[in-house]
Image (cartoon, rainbow, N blue to C red; front, top):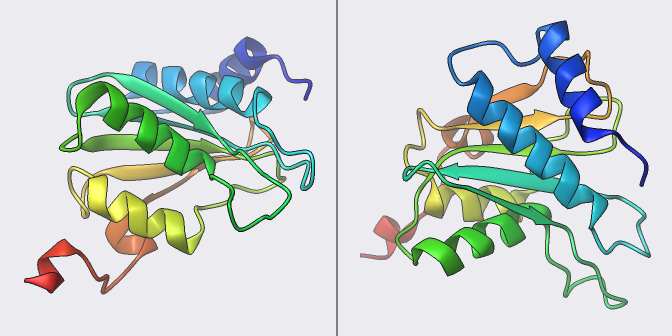
Length: 160
């Protein structure tokens, strides 16, 4: 996968795709997500995906998709980023914000399984934003909360 991460992030910044108080964190997460996507193991789909999250402790953790020949045993980028954060911060880790990068012409939000996983580890379902960036650094990202991505969701509190 050929992409110059620094140029991509700078172009996204200059185009207005990264505009608000969180520019520094979001830019760092975007760079981490793109770099993670470069390391994706995707010999079957050829679909490199990267994700990076910011925890409430202000640390950034990245992940990429990892496929295998069975397809159903693969790990999505969001899962590997969350797993990475849990390894370093423990199972009570909370996500303040997340960036996902896909090699697509339009921003692509997470699949249903990843949305459910995000719901269980997000700091605030109504305030923490999941940002989807695409291959075109001039396109604005799609930013949605977990409540928007997964309305009327089922969670651990429903098991009580």
